[in-house]
Length: 239
Image: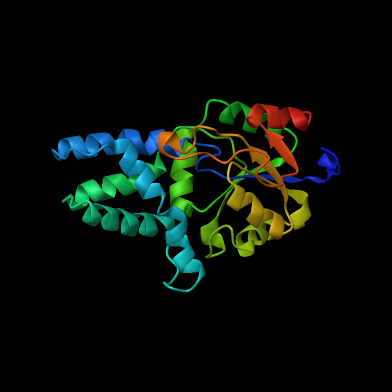
């Protein structure tokens, strides 16, 4: 923690997909029965990974002006439709809606709820995610995550890693960017937060991308803090 003043941190902002909840197994386990009911033979894990691969590119088109602003549910649906077309898979409207809604119900990592509660004893703890406000509200409620507030990128009408998202979060909570610690398992998220003036903590999630991709690793990029889970992070703050 050399050069890092933990006492200056007033808000701990946590990424959600992959950092706080397990998107891979959560979506995979909801994809499988949808395809099974439709009589379609698709590897649910591979499909989930391929769908997630379109996550950053879909938001990039909003950020570069290629398409107008849209919430993540809409981007997920567009990516889903394109992926199904590429695989030559015919799926009904109800099934497609169920798949998009899968991102609203994802299991928390085992350490998340208890670790967040410990951090919350001394700090404001916020969910800061690219998920839409409705998506995050349902997800946080379903997973029983003890956040003080939800800060959706929808509030900035932009997406991380745009500086506007991080600075909007700080502004809404009436703190300086340097008083916010961004916690994430992704290099791109922490790089965006750092560029916006936030302090950063890398949370190790070696299984967050499933078996098809390598998760980001500590040491691959700069971060003020590194923790193996939310419990260790809470310990670094004396919580």
